[in-house]
Image 1 (tube, rainbow, N blue to C red):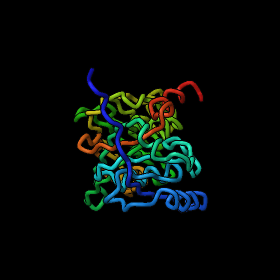
Image 2 (image 1 turned 60 degrees about the horizontal axis):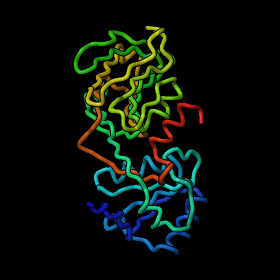
Image 3 (image 1 turned 180 degrees about the vertical axis):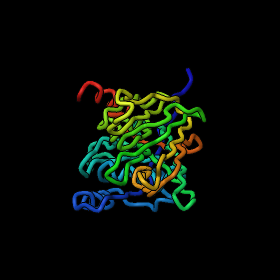
Length: 262
């Protein structure tokens, strides 16, 4: 019989933590117990905090190839495992890998400057003033909505589909589905349009109509570009990030549970 592949060995651990007291205390306890490696020489990154800390850690180590294992020491912990100081190396060795790809936002502002930012969860466009935004939406170069009047629009990854996308009534996407969610934010016209599911190879272009009168900001997770004129968004398949989850608590299981209200 063929041998099962050996479990990965995560001997050198780098710890990163949010600034909250709970996360910093957890980091001190874990470093004292397991030692600490520099991120560039570590086998794995352990992130201590909430989902905000996990997103910033994924952004920071996006191109490092390092697997990232989160433990919940923050507010929202959808992307995190339960916290425990016990048997950390054994938990890391038994963890399941979820591979995710980020979105790449390429935006052009009113001054003609180009901006590039990656997003783990979603890219959103929001109105900057009291007036609703007027947006034109193209998918793979084909006009799909000549005019959307709304507070904005977002494109979410499967990993981000349970975040802001869900709050604006967007669909939950299984983590292994090769789909993206294009979801309007408080649409006024067309009133009945509730969004679309797109293949994850699709490229979405949003042109801002009347950008001087109705300015719009574009946000890739936490990176904001003000007064954009056009935004191009697509999944960057050249970047792959490995997230580690305890057995029975994988990201795909959590996303499935969300669909049943758990």
